[in-house]
Image (cartoon, rainbow, N blue to C red; front, side):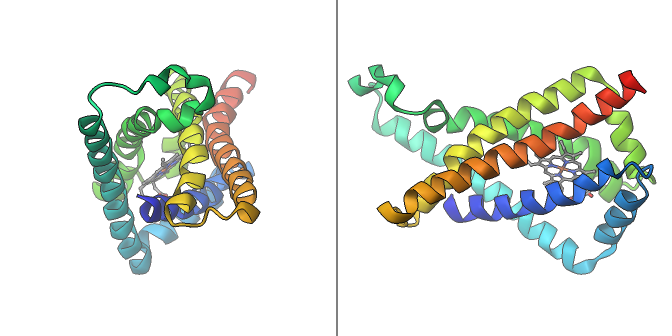
Length: 203
Ligand code: HEM
């Protein structure tokens, strides 16, 4: 869980940087050039297979651990009454993770499948503008990014803990880094639908 999770964070950093080309205001020229280069690069295509394997492993392992924990504890602990001590994101990784998974399926169907698989989209920038011209679709993205932020916030620190790196000297720093990544990544991704919605309404 922790290793695949950290690997997926690295992908998200790359994806957020690449997608920020959408903000250049050059009609998508640089964004399209970059996407074209990525789609034609054999090394990237191999990394993509590893990425999808990582996503599948992370999802299956997540559900497996959740079912296992539930099975081991059919009657909830009394301690659960003291909810306030445990962060919402920590108790609800399965909820935030499932919503991010639904987001991912919708997202891949909108962008990855037409562009990379059936090649029915020649202009990826235009496809992005079209997708984010829908207010409902954009609102769903922003909502999913809030959940992604919560998932990353807890997941990042918890991954280091699982890997045995809960040293008191570093744990505060790791938690802070997790917070920066969570807010930074989900903020950059959420800014994309917001940017295109504003462009649509403000012209
Ligand atoms: C809201 C902002 C986002 C935009 C505008 C966006 C855009 C795109 C586009 C255009 C593609 C297809 C072509 C390409 O890779 O260049 C893509 C693929 C993909 N996206 Fe996103 N994305 C966003 C957020 C996310 C998030 C938050 C995740 C993960 C939780 C994600 C996961 C993926 C994956 C796994 C692929 C397929 C692999 C790949 O093509 O590299 N994306 N995205």
